[in-house]
Image (spheres, rainbow, N blue to C red):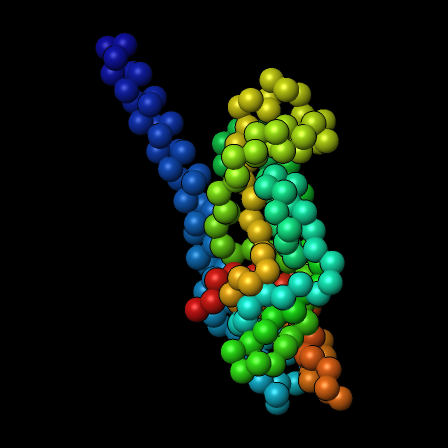
Length: 194
């Protein structure tokens, strides 16, 4: 009888973990579909339109150092999960303006001050445990809690080919690149090209 109860508890716990881990996948797929539904930016797209731009990332001058991996990037979202993927988490995100070079050679400046990410995290490097501890210490998380935490980091790196959806802020004019941005109520979406 006792073995049966333990088996049922284990199955329920495993089912909950699988459900929780797929929530992120479901949200990511939904956001990716929304990204694909946007109009592709053209020279005749009116300012204010919601658009998608696909291209290769070029830094706009300043780069960030991602806190968990230490890699230079133009955008990151670093998370520390305290109780599994469905539990409480601490998050730090950073973005700086960058440029996308499109396949036709044109450039679009991306104002990434407010962004959501639609692709999976990258593996953390071998020196990540020290960086993860520093990240957690800066957040004031107790060492005993840190040992049970899980960490992940999403990065936008120079040379990556990505898709960005947002609002066209300025079109190409006088040799200047177009600009796409977002704000706190309507952040840009950064995802994989389709």
